[in-house]
Length: 174
Image (cartoon, rainbow, N blue to C red; front, side, top):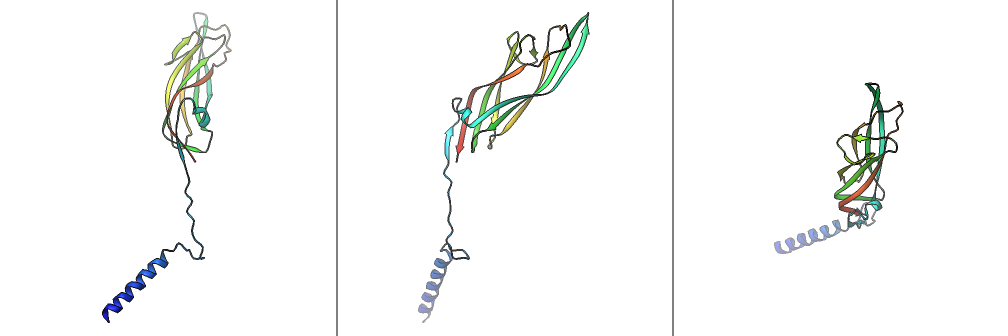
């Protein structure tokens, strides 16, 4: 009799556990699990612009004027912000980009402090930028320019170009 009672209890426990794991919720409908498929793509210099855009923005422009021995020297300064902006619905893993930033100006000789001189009117800086998981980041640089003596107090700020030198890591596309 004890054996029959133990077998009956075991059967009830088994049936109860099967009913409890049936996947039905309170309304009696089955739950569906949706698994997102992702693709992991190497980030390269060639496909970089497909996933990210580089924008350069100059702000906080200021010009200090100094007169020495009858010559006016201008000391322009500004803030350069380099923005990486995601172009697609994706994320990034262990990703970075090496960017060459270059200034150029016509008619005015600029020397950007701590930047390599390319020509009398152009300087460059090569920077590695880490790309976060969400792909959006910015990096800020304080620019101080040196100019040759000017005859007038007007000066225009140089323009900035950004070139992708290399890219590494992975793009995860949903």
